[in-house]
Amino acid sequence: MPQKIAVLHTSFVFVSVEPVINELIAELLPGAEVMHFVDSDVLATVVREQGISASSEQRMVHLAQAAEAAGADIIFSACSSLGPALDVAARNVHTPVVKIDEAMAILAASRGSRIGVLATVPTTLGPTSDLIQLKADELGREVQIEQRLCAGAFDVLMSGDRPQHDSMVIEQAVDLAKNVDTIVLAQASMGRLAETLREKTGLPVLSSPRMGVEYLAERVAELAK
Image (cartoon, rainbow, N blue to C red; front, side, top):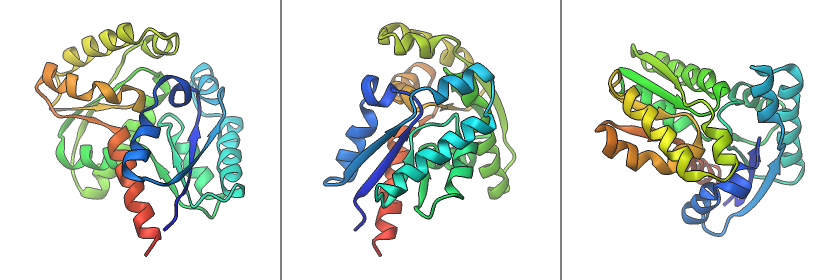
């Protein structure tokens, strides 16, 4: 069974701030060897440039190629903002590549009609919304997507003020809930708030960390057949 998993990071959030991905892999893929490949500035670059440049795209390709060269059996991307760049990276390696938000997008597209996408990084809104729309099109479903940015919350989280980050996200989610029937948390760094937000809004709240790693575990099992 393939057990060498490479996790691609575009910031230090899941390396030093939020350990949720490591915890989920340990729970769902016990015994797996996990390697981390980090470009700590590429997400900041995408935010600063307000989009994915050819240079940022190439940096994701290099991360994936480094993971493949290190002998990874499967590559797992922990970043939703650079999803389109990951698609390019996947075409430049032979190793299977899994997006953290793919399973979440499929579920949102299959269940929601008015879907609210909540993010703390502006560059995540487009890729997440586009992925949900793509999955809805594949399923033959019509959906309406409303985007909502919780401006400044990610910087607050990275500064170490988790309570303030959480308060900002909760406030925006409660307001967004007035207009939608499903809320999608666009970034894995928001995932631990999902249950709290379900209680506060009374709506289904989808987050990527657990679903993403569960999907990763399914892909690992398929590769072992």
